[in-house]
Image 1 (cartoon, rainbow, N blue to C red):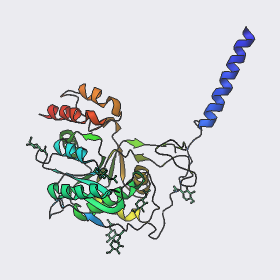
Image 2 (tube, helix red, strand yellow; image 1 turned 45 degrees about the vertical axis):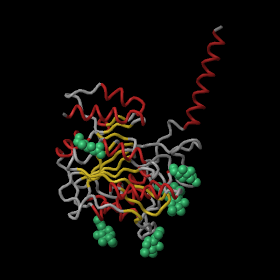
Image 3 (cartoon, rainbow, N blue to C red; image 1 turned 90 degrees about the horizontal axis):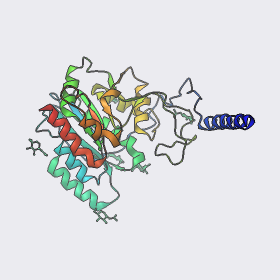
Length: 312
Ligand SMILES: *[C@@H]1O[C@H](CO)[C@@H](O)[C@H](O)[C@H]1NC(C)=O
Ligand SMILES: *[C@@H]1O[C@H](CO)[C@@H](O)[C@H](O)[C@H]1NC(C)=O
Ligand SMILES: *[C@@H]1O[C@H](CO)[C@@H](O)[C@H](O)[C@H]1NC(C)=O
Ligand SMILES: *[C@@H]1O[C@H](CO)[C@@H](O)[C@H](O)[C@H]1NC(C)=O
Ligand SMILES: *[C@@H]1O[C@H](CO)[C@@H](O)[C@H](O)[C@H]1NC(C)=O
Ligand SMILES: *[C@@H]1O[C@H](CO)[C@@H](O)[C@H](O)[C@H]1NC(C)=O
């Protein structure tokens, strides 16, 4: 009996060891992350605007607190409308502006509809690269370029995905209290994030694409904030760095080459999309400090209603 037990224990231990070894769990990150920046332009942003928006006005956002860049697929017409009706309603929030960033859809009909939508709302910016998941980095670079050209006077720039609800009233209050308005990168920090090698992962990375075990610190892509002075600096810097297909990691790589203050505000996010509505329902007037909720599509409006009603 005893023998059997210790045998089982041994089995268990060696299996765990094998497994952890396989998963690389206790392997620490590389000490020096090599960022392959160059001293000459190796990644010129050659794309041109095919749709543009002047939402920040002739004074380029002089009186604005925030310009929001929503990364969204061209065909997500309903989601753009939902966003206009909820957190991005500029008749409720005069100190913010929102633009939707898109690339070229592969379907011509969709592009025709997009052109009509842009004429109606004047809040869409498009460049002539193909809109795909792994071109998101190009979209972020386009956003940096656009802000530095057309909205450089707005204090802050929010980069956000289309499935995130912004608690606009709280975000405005929060940004107004900050003493920093320059040299600033804020969000939900990933430190020593490990590279996914699993072929099934959306974030998979081959050794050819990227060798180190971990990434430099970066804020999670669904929502992060820059002080707007950073946008021109980062756009210029992006051209001296090889494109990296994960846009949030790419941003972290660029940031590591600047003097930016990296601020962690993870506690202000609902990161779990599945339970965001559940947590939102627990908020009350005294405890309403969440700025962003990652959502399941069907919860988007309910979460917004909770945020908005608490602000009244
Ligand atoms: C953008 O416009 C420039 C100047 O007209 C042109 O040389 C370049 O080829 C265009 N780029 C693309 C990707 O269309
Ligand atoms: C924004 O809010 C105002 C005031 O509540 C409302 O009249 C308007 O319809 C809203 N805009 C959109 C696009 O929903
Ligand atoms: C293009 O999009 C339209 C509108 O959504 C759709 O009816 C049509 O089937 C699409 N065409 C192709 C080739 O996917
Ligand atoms: C990104 O866009 C460029 C320009 O349209 C295109 O050539 C390339 O195939 C796209 N890349 C991906 C990964 O979709
Ligand atoms: C830098 O380039 C080398 C050689 O091409 C590559 O192995 C490595 O993964 C790259 N590092 C980054 C951070 O992209
Ligand atoms: C970016 O580069 C352009 C062209 O070299 C230069 O005019 C501009 O001042 C630079 N912007 C920043 C913020 O460094």
